[in-house]
Length: 315
Image (cartoon, rainbow, N blue to C red; front, side, top):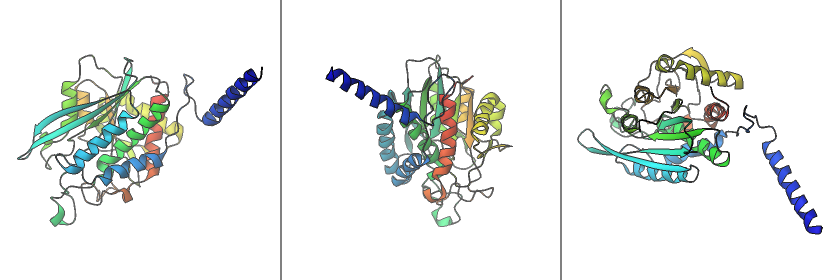
């Protein structure tokens, strides 16, 4: 009798703890609580990446960060695969790796979330011409989108998503010399070319340069042209949540990793604030692309919208 009472009390406390844990959380249409995205946790991941230094291909920082990304995602995802490949660069052989983390790999119904993890090997927009051939820190241009996805992976470990999710971190996005488009988007091009014919996620979302302190996310033109329904899905969700960083304005057409995915039949949009920190772009591809010019609040705004898209019933 005493043992039964003890068991009942333990179950009561477990239920109470569960109710406290989920109290105040929004709930998706299918009855699953939507986890709370924490900007500070994502920002810690941003700083951790920049602590490795520049992550341009073939560098020490690149190798160290790859190990960190793989180890971090293995702690949260159901399956992690490293997609190694090489590409002939400017007088060098590039050793590149896409990191692919899958959640609920048994499900056919899937979405794709992606970002690039490499950084630019040259600061060609820096005011100091003596430093233009040096690689950049890449806090916003590289680390910010990855940071959002790493923290989302933490959330999906604790609360599995209602459908399959693949996180893909592309390498070699930012390698090319200005004007040489053939040397950009190396990882997404390889992923798109090598994807199995039966891999058909509902849609993809690319995160690039989403950490700017003065975050303003217009609707990117190629995304509107190639996947207007997914643009509406994401921007409508932001409006529902009152997240004003997602602007209804139409931005520039970007040459980014979403283009090879669309060409491969995966409807993918690009969430990007190219005006970093404003229309002068004075931190983009410079040594000023550092964590001090990014913010947890911006990462939380983006991460919250993506979390709600993942955990809500999607059309």
